[in-house]
Image (cartoon, rainbow, N blue to C red; front, side, top):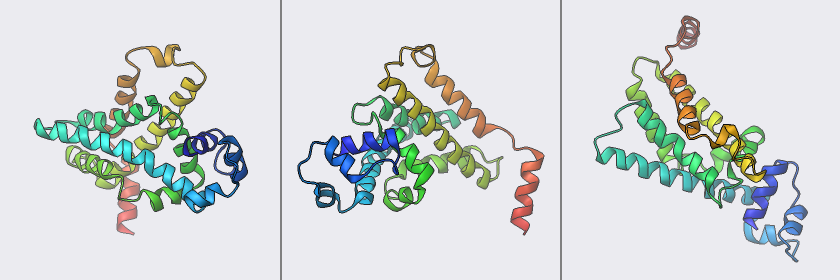
Amino acid sequence: MKAVAQRLFALHGIHGVAIKDIVEAAEQRNKASVQYHFGSTEGLIGELLVDGAKQIDAFRQAMLNEMAAAGGPRNVRDVLQAFIRPVDQMAESAEGSTYLRFLSNVQMTHRALIKTHIGNRWNAGYRQCLEHFRALLGHIPPALVEQRMSLVATYATAIFAAKEAARDEGRTSSRFWSVPYTLDNIIDTFQAMLECTPSASTLELLDERDSA
């Protein structure tokens, strides 16, 4: 039932799916099955969020631990590998084939649910990446580093949600997704975002906020 619900939420949005739609698509006879298993629609959404977050976080922490054992991460790109590749792996997996589109919908319309259900419990790898970025980007104010990392996370969700959709439609053999350098080129763009020297206007506005 969870896989069916996630696909419906991914394709139609949270507001576009009723409990009866999930029950019918899952071929459940009991119309109260969602409430029975999950308590409520929000409970179901929460479980779906946590299921995907656990997988991404586990892979992310495994990559960071492997780097640490080898004396890393050595640079911003190393950290980005651990930050981005787990998201791509989720998009490529059978169980995660609709997760990023679902997550993207929740981010746009019910962002508070992410904080409620994932919070700091299932994002340890994210927080480790943030600490590494802060240490490696010491020339950039921490507030800007944190905001840039949030932007990278949002962009990554959107990009790999598009990859999910392309897989659904059989378009992963397109010029965009099939060339071998696509993922590395995506990571290049994120690296440029993080390492870019802040403009004078950005720093001025940051100073104004801090001195207010």
